[in-house]
Length: 413
Image 1 (tube, rainbow, N blue to C red):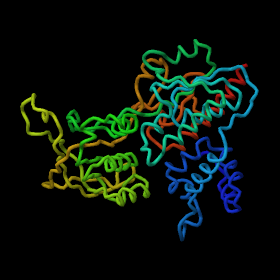
Image 2: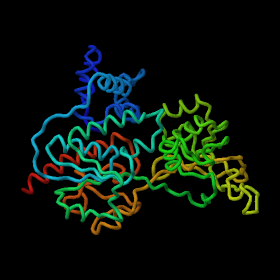
Image 3: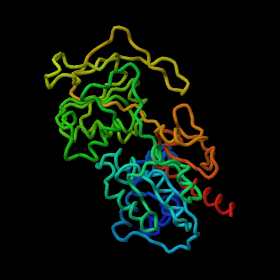
Image 4: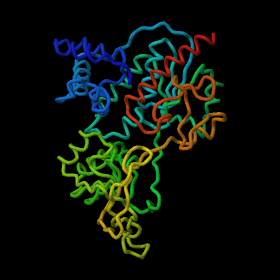
């Protein structure tokens, strides 16, 4: 998605020239150490590898990770000297799209300020991915690279209800990039998620990543954990629960193993670690404890989940076979903790305070192929536009928008 010259990169690796291999990747990718760990290579770069037709494809993702780590272990943070243009650009959000956009703009000579609503930097790279998949040290290095390029990062600065896009223009910014991601969990239909011990995967992983030393009881003491969903985030949540000491961890998914949207590698890791899969299964009710006295400490807690078995029918609009309920197949699974991993949507607050910003029905910002939104000078990319997707796609959108912003400002002179 960002146009890395993979044959040239692999050629240098084969010759043992790892620095040259890194420079090939670095021409196109702002986050090689990240992408080498979390991107779905099997459906992107490795999916196009001709060796994969009859055998295993080249391990492009692993080579990318190795080369990036090799370079980081031997070199400090790169801080090239660039000629300043005297123009200011604001970047909203410090996730992969924002990092890529800010980094490219800084190299082009712009004064870039990143506004992050949370108290830490990195977006989903920091709060949404377990450290056993993506260590914080890897993300920290990318942030230090941004700072070395002169990018200013303002944490605790939400551009939504307190400060708006118009305020940024009034402060003298010549263009704005919106890369604030999609961090609002989608709520399941017909399920009461208000019980203690029921979490969205987004909130669950955030708690563990940021408050690991002071976890809520419903996470820390859970011995039976069930995750609803079959994507990569569901695998992350299940594997995290196992590492926190849960004795039994289940994943339920309404289609079969072959239809799981998670990366094959992630599913294999989960199986190796003892995660129990209940596929062709769908939740219909979250069950509370039978305690009726509000003074009892067990009042209002989750006790289990009621499910039904499914079978696959004809393909739906997405091309996948539709799951159909098997009548009379209800069964209960006792649980201490239930994690809903059903996707996320963009935060609606930015649109509410930005008149004229057009969005889709689910809140994704409408932008053209260059990232331009319905407002002149405002560009967007990443999950804020596509909904939850991959790091490399978000990064590609940030780089595309950076080039478009540069052109816009230069033509506006």
